[in-house]
Image (cartoon, rainbow, N blue to C red; front, top):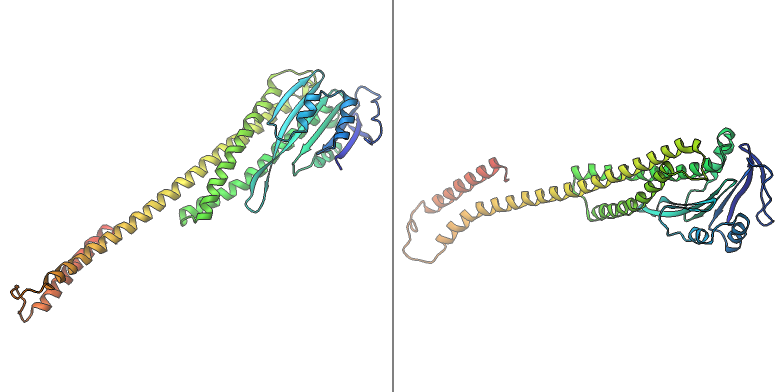
Length: 324
């Protein structure tokens, strides 16, 4: 069902539910407003709403397209807002996106969701339980919806931060395997894409603060300033998370280079130690009749002793210098 809820409110209290299969009733009082929530609506449903509220066809077209970046447009007395939602999906917790389009007028607010995993039922229940807030009208509902979307960003970042910190601890204690390294690069790429969403989202929030719009009352400005601050905080945390990921990748690479350097030094030290008996054995393994100490009674023991002393000295020096 594409229609999640359609209700009329008066003085912050629920007046009646609306059946969109029937003609939409006309609001009796100036302070009345209607809140319609749609989820991936059918063409007939959005057409009926468009005709009743006089929504601009370009705005309706954008509302049905889930690929738009966050933006805000004014069409006469109607304000059109697009926000992107964020959630994690799949066993690898990949960042996925949804789209929420909002039509705002003096006596109506209409939301159109695509791909979002979080419905607006909690917002509606919270506002209906606080009529002194809901009586501010549709512009306050707009703030509540956008704030709800931004809170979803915090939920995603909190989960990803815990994963990144766990990876950072593991990178310091042991070496990351191929799957963990691939996860680091995938997550950094996902965060880069998220920042491309947060940039327009921050611009959108700032426009509410810096531009006067006839659809919004002045007393709602403090709420939108708070919204802009939340978006900035999300952006800062994402930037910090990307820096941390880069640090983890660099640290893992440095530790791997250090491990390879240790192995290289060990191999070089053992090669130097083994080169001594190899060289001596090679010399005395030549088939010449006249060689010093060839027929000496203690020659074999002396050669072994020399090998042992030289190899032991090399081992001690390499061990002392940290190569072994």
